[in-house]
Image (cartoon, rainbow, N blue to C red; front, side, top):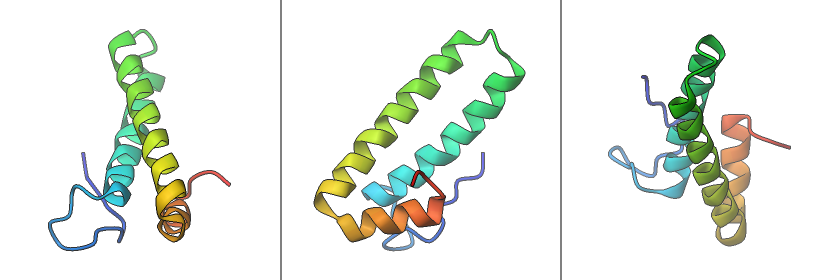
Amino acid sequence: MVKKTKGLALHEKDTGSSEVQVALLTDKIELLSKHIKKFKKDKHSSVGLLKAVNRRKKLLDYLKRNKNDSYKNVLTKLNLRK
């Protein structure tokens, strides 16, 4: 799994900021989505996908509330939502 932060990291080893966490979760969601399309009966991965989607949603809500400019930047760089 290639982890791309797509230019959202604050510094070279940044893995904890909300922006980077959203990017990493997006990569994980894309990977799990492809897996579930191939293996439709894999319920454990389906649960993991739902957990990742909900975690990303919470992080995006946090960014929208507290760092609105960063929220807009994340949405454009990751091609998410509106």
